[in-house]
Image 1 (cartoon, rainbow, N blue to C red):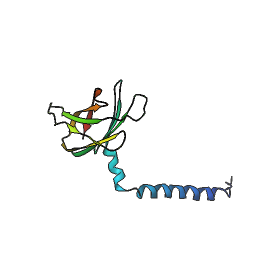
Image 2 (cartoon, one colour):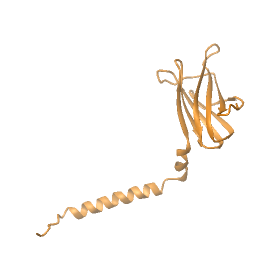
Image 3 (cartoon, rainbow, N blue to C red):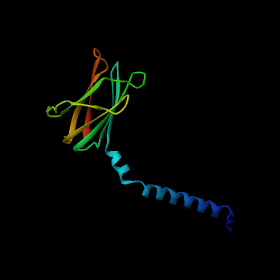
Image 4 (spheres, helix red, strand yellow):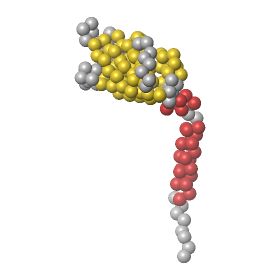
Amino acid sequence: MKRIKSPMTLPRYFVGLALAMAALLSVAATPLAAATDDDSFFTHLHTEKAMANVTVSPGRAGPVEIAIQLETTDEAPLTAKAVSVTLVDQSGRKLAPVEASRDGEDSWHVKVAQLTPGRWMLGLGISISEADHVSIESPILIK
């Protein structure tokens, strides 16, 4: 029995080949910085009064930057008066608290000179007003 080739097979082959090449080129053209973004550590903290999305970049030993986005429990931006960050390693060694710098209405950041690999407890002290303060903490992992 002789197989009959459809005239549409060849164009479909070339379309598939073109799509595969485009996908390969887009991956090859991705900047190196995008690969290092995977090193970040993200955690979500929340209490009855406030929530925080925290990203530690990079999530490995050495100097890191901690980005903090504050939200109300309704997921609206939370404007705070001040934010401080504390870090305690698994052996109990506590780094000095660091005052965060405001980046926007609900965004804050901190630079930490040196973190060692292992589990750390990250604490946030959020001053919402003169009389309203929130403390939340979460473990983070530094590779």
